[in-house]
Structure formats: C-alpha cells, structure tokens
Amino acid sequence: MSSYYDCLDDKYRVIVDGIAYPTTYDHTDAIRQMPKYDKMRPDDVIVCSYPRSGTHLSIALVDLVMRNGDIEAADKIHINQRSIWMHMSQQIWNGEVSMAADGINPMTEAEMWPSPRLLCSHLCLEAMPESVRRGICKVVVVLRNPKSVLNSKYQYEILIPEKYQKPLTFDGYLNSHLTEAQDLVSYGTWLNHVSGWWQNRDRMNGNIHFIYYEDMIKDITSVVTKLAKFLNKDLSEGKIKKIAEYLQFRNMKNNPKTGKAFENMSVYAKVTDTNKLKTYHAAHMRKGAIGDWKDKITVAQSERIDDYLRPKLQEIGLEFQYE
Image 1 (cartoon, rainbow, N blue to C red):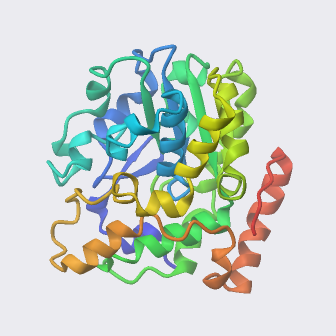
Image 2 (image 1 turned 180 degrees about the vertical axis):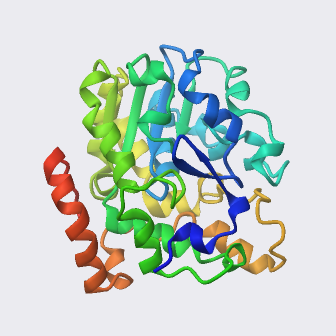
C-alpha cells in the first residue's frame, strides 16, 4: 500500500535530517538552521503541537493567559497575529506569497517582535533550537489522542485532491505513521513527535507543560488554571471563567478572528474552485469532538493503530482519552 508522499508530488516535500516537511508552508532554510539558532529569549513561550491537535485553540489559550485575561485586547487581533510561527512566515499566513521559499525567514520576523513573545511550532524536539531543548524558555506541548489526530489530518488533507498524483487512502496514510521512517509524512510521525517531548521532559528544567486536547474540550477551566500557574500568572476566578467561555469550541469556530485562520492563505492558488477552498479553510476547526474518529475509522484500522502504538505508549507511560 502507498504512503502519503507516494501520492503527493515531490515538489511538496523537502527532507531535513531525515524528517519530511511541506514546502508549501514551511521555510526550509529556517528549519535547516533551527537546531543551531541562538537567539531564543528566556521569557519566550512556545506552543508546540503535532498538526490537528488543537494548535489554534492552544495559541488562543496561551495568548489570553499571557495577557492576564485581557480578552478585549486579544480579540482585536487575528489569531495568526497573536503568535509567530518559527517555521512559517507571516507572509504565508497573510497570502503575500504562495510558496514558503518566497517568504522571509520566520525567525528573522520573530527577532523584530517585542518580549515576551508567543511562538508556535509543529517541529519535533530534535528539530528545535538547542537552547529550547535545554529549557531556556517555557514550552507548552499540546497532545491529542492519535486516532483523532490521524483521522482529522486525513479528512483535512483530502479536501484538496488537486494536491495528489493519485488518491490518498486512509490505509495509505496509516502506512506513513505506523513506521519508524520519518520521511513519509509531514513533520515525521505522530509518535516520534509526542514521544520526543514526553521522554525528554525532565531535561527542560521545569519549563515544559503538557496540555491535552481532550481536557480542553471537557474541562477548559482546569486547563486554564494549571496553565496560569505554569506561566506564573495570578488570574482571578472571574478572569479564568471568561477565558474558559471564550475558548469554548463553538465560540472559537464562530469568531472570525479565530475561526478563519487560513482564510488569507494562497498556497493552493492553482485550485480554482473557490467554494472548495472556502470549505478547506473553514475545516481547520472541524468538530471539536473527542470520539469523532469512530465515525470514520474502521474496527480493523483502529486495531491496527492500537497494535502498533499501544505497546510503545505504554513503554513510555503516555496515556490518552479516546472518547
């Protein structure tokens, strides 16, 4: 069976240190230079997640806590202007360029931002600056159960079939993840990403905090409270309650400043069907559900995921909620 990049044109992939990255979004030079980047600041906060794990919800969450709960100020700013991506230029988000290579190195953009900075990334631990791996700044890692992640990513990918040379099946997509190889799917496998951060958490001098997507959906108030403690913010119960309400999935999705994160991007300029593009952009926040994967993944596919991932997750002591 084929894998993700067997179906996708090679021009959409670049491999750096054995890991695949999408050339549409990611600035290759920034990624190549990232491990030796030496201008991180001690008061930086980084949101790090594997794609489709609740990244924009987490960015909004961390931004609001860093702002001491000032929702009015935050909501004047589009979600993509509240943080800066370490490997994606603001020019990509703004639609000023249609391929990442044509944009400014995002870390050059980051250097122009005042402190304290909120940064975000889909990079695995090994691809991050060495200083980040040593715990120079705070990192908030977002985790989501693998069945939801793989289903959400696949359902999102197939909305733009023009990207593919041949149809991408979910079984083919699983081939890209249930393997030791890191060059078959963008950012490497889900397991490599989450296990790298999890297994190295003790090396980061207490400057790493894990947030579960499922907890954000089930009990966002508790998530806000724990994050505020990690970021040394003294928030009143009233502010925590207001932040929690703002972050309800339905509110985030219906808010133009947060629910339309991809609306200005032009990376798929060759897709002439504007309705299809609108659907694709709107789908970045799909359902905000935990057990939605059951409607799409067959029993056999679910068992295949379990057979590969369960023993590896048990070995490192990482557990997830699947419903």
